[in-house]
Every structure is written in structure tokens, then in C-alpha cells.
Image 1 (cartoon, rainbow, N blue to C red):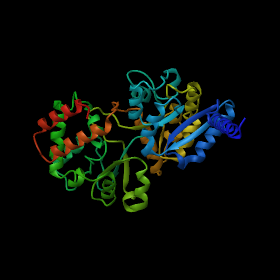
Image 2: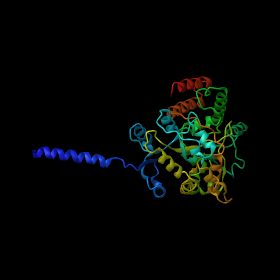
Image 3: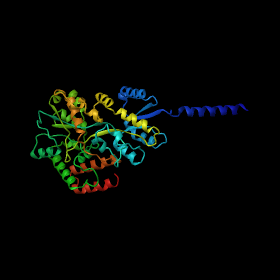
Image 4: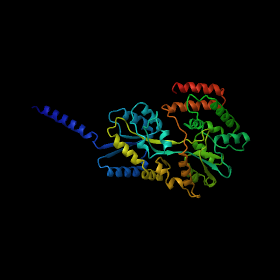
Length: 395
């Protein structure tokens, strides 16, 4: 046999052998998270403990930047070798469920989570998502300038009509999904009711409130960062945001922090609270669905949720963890603990949020319509009728 033939055979053999060595090991479970590297110590410890208790499983943890999460996940899940467990947001998870790419999860498997959360996260009446952690905004108010804070947006509107000497708050009408979330608190959350009489009346009140100066003019263009700055400077009386902002107030405006009180999130007609959630999904093409579910439930058990919560500002989603003193008791002199307890309590009264597979497009449509209404660009009815039409066409 000629030397070059032998050489070719050897090269082919090496290449084939290399392919086999790069194949995924039989006991390897691939686990993706979104931007959790800051808590790598916690994650690696949980993984090590799970592997110790489950010697037949080896976890391969891959952390993905938020900006790449959806694109990379979609490509991976549509492939023949997807990750086995993925951390996502509910809207994108719902899009994947709609495409038939996710494994269904039984009610029994989700019994460690509050029914309010599980029911809110069902897609077409079925479970595809495993809750991981949540956040729920609070109301920060200046006790010196506003001794009796409003509990609802309607109370704010009433105070504005009664006359105020200073803007009550700077609501960020055009920032992300702020307006979509406000509408949801009034049960306005689809093209079917976006031009209802309730929606028209609410927008009429918002227009009058904005025109009266109860919301600063910058509310149409600026973000929650500017809202926070105005609150810290005493230019507005209250601010809505996550508990993580409390530390920013303490560090950047100690005088305002000294007079800051905490109250539940402002509510609308439904009397319920908005919240945000991150969850896990299991691709239907995963060859390790049982192990992936077991690991997801391990990540979200009482001990692991409480440990993560104590490292962050997130809320646990495990019912037993939420019943722990960490979430139920707060010393009178500890505003950080008070914020945590208030936020956790709100998860018992959450407003159902529809899943929007084209959420970004809907947000843009709603925000543009809101700006036109507040600037009196046309009649409220005509703007909302067009919004309904555009929304029905898929954004």
C-alpha cells in the first residue's frame, strides 16, 4: 500500500475519533442561564451538591448574556441537540411553547410553588414553565412631603384634580413596558379592550393629569433613572421601583432616605399587583427531561431559593421559602427588610399578565399611541381605534 494512502486512512481515522470524543457524554445535562456569572460561587455549589446526590448526572453550566439569550436559545432549541434546561423570561418561553418545542410539566411537579404563580404562568391551560425568581415593584414616598401616600392611581388622579403644589410622581410613559403594565392593572391588555370605554376614560384622565402638571412634562421622554433623581432631589413626592433602588437612595441622597417610607405598589381597577418573573423551560427534544426537571426543582427548593435570595434582591418563588421569616418579618428600623416583606406579600395578589410573543412591537404601538394622546395629537377614540387595528395585525 502506498504511503499516501496509509496517511489518508490515518487522517480520516483521527478525524472520526475526534468527532466521537467531542460528542456529549451520556450522563451530561446541559444547563443554560442568563447572566448569572456574578453568582458563580452559588451556582457552582448548587451544581456540585446536586451531582453529589445524583452521581449518574454531570451538569454542564453555560451562562449566556441577556442580549444573546433569545437568539441563541431559539437556534439551539430548533436543533437536534438542544440544552436540557434553559433559563428564560415568560414571554419568550410562551413563544417557544406555541411552536411546540417545550416539554409539558404536570401540576403535581409544580406543587412547591404558590398556585397564584403557577396559574398565572400556564400557557393555553398547560404548564411549560418552572418559576425561578421574581421581582415586584414598591412605592417609595417622602414621608415629610407626603404623609399619607396614595394606594391607587385613581387616588393620584383625584389629588391632582384637587390641586397640588408639586408633581406627585414622574411616570415614565414611553419607557419599555411601563404603560402596558399600567393598562394591565385596569384589565386593559388586548386589542379586544384597548379601545373600550374604560380605556378611553383612563386615557382621558391621564391626559388631564399630565396637562395639569401632576406628572412632569419629561414623563413622556425620560426614564426611571431620571424619575429616581427627581425623587432623591425632592422634586416629586413618590417613586415606583424595585427594592434595589432603596440602596441607591441611601447612598446618593441620605437626607431623602431618612424621610423615605415604603408602601405597596400602586394599583388600578383590578386592585392587583404587577410582577416580573424568570423561569426554566425543558426543550421537548432533550434526551434528559426527567433529570432536567429534577435539577430545576432542586434549584428552586426552599434552601437553595433562600440562599440565592440572601445574595440578591430577588424574590423566591418556592411557597415554603416565601413563608420563611426572611420574607415575613421585618424589624421596624430595617427598611431593606421591610421592602423585601412588602414585595413578597404582593406575590399573593398578582394581576394575570397575558403572554405577548411580539411584546416589543406591542410596546412600541402602545407607547406611540400614549404620547399622541397626552400631546393631544388627535381624538383619544381615533388613536385607540388605530391602536386596536395595528395590534390585531400583529404589531
